[in-house]
Length: 544
Image 1 (spheres, one colour):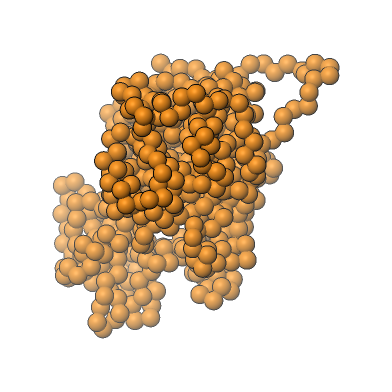
Image 2: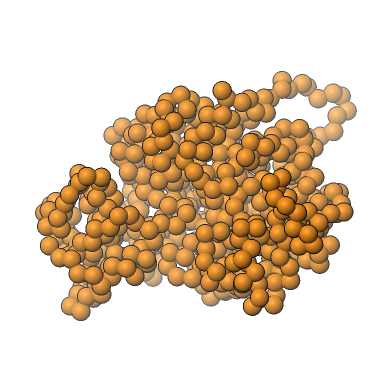
């Protein structure tokens, strides 16, 4: 049975002499204070079936912010969080906003070497660490003199107090009064490290405005491509250590609706939460939606509360989208974004999701308040239909890369963010992506975009999914190799796949080598890690 959350009360006219309405907030600390004043008793976060109200979240994040300042941290200092998602994680995020410090989330799946890189590069002075990740954090801390303290997160009821190093004792006695950090909408509040699909992760610094820009533009234009309504309930599917997860949480938080949070995405749990709490909106990768549909509980009634689902971070196979529409029976919107864009860059709205839609394979149009263009290698704008580098102008974009001014200058050019993707615009302004600029295969001077080859290859009935990489070739510079996952029980030979591709794509784009794998390596947001495929299969020979 669905639980009712935050049922709105009938609005009464303000009495004579009542104070003016609260101004719209432009910072996370202002949003927290507003919700605590307007809806203190309503649910803000649900985690492991425990509710936290907006009033409680404001009070406890104030307490944590005061403790950060008491510990000697000052405006602009970096504060790391090494753990899974929880109500406490997002409380700490708000505490950083209120203390003027900058949160640095650390993906708990990373190795000690990767954790060392993030903590070392960010210069984090304090790290909040969940007990299960303490061995890695402690190992790294020994060689990081700038990291002054590790605070063990022992605040959960199922954990034993961690003594002097525990969060409970560390925060004890801190005040709960509102703070005035002196930061504004353009000041840093979050530093997220890129997924590292092309090398060592870079620290992307985001401002408060990154979490307000999209919502404000949609409201200003009266667009309903995606919206947050007063009776909505949001499910956070992406990890909060990624912009996708943090931005989704904050958009819902700013809108004053409940967020249902999982420690990590588990399809069975996601379906249970949708059904139990009457979740109406969520943002998920196609792979997550596929897993949710595969669950035995995934019947139409489990999803009857859903109103809109946004999807992104990876291409959505047409068959999967059809299945989602059939089973979930709600509206769908495709999102295109990046860590650097801070929020949604383009969107394919629900109105374009219909059978036979000519733009269904596009990434949509520039969102209200944003602009989109395609440029050549010299930065000159290209006309419709010509493939080049995707550029976006958005108020949500990053401040820059932490400690990398030259890289920032190459990525932010005259107010435009170079997205690192190759694509083209049609005459109506719809964006069609071809591939990552860095994944483009150049064979004898010809550009080959892996996504185009994969799209044709995946049409073979025996292919579940594929990923195409470039490998060194002494004659042509690079040649094309396909890493193929076969459908359960299916069989295919390299020659059969090659013959399948003939006539579907140009002959020079057809892979000259094929490798059959059990699965494609992905990061937690669902992106295929081509660099790992290149490391594993870049020299393996398997020709038709």
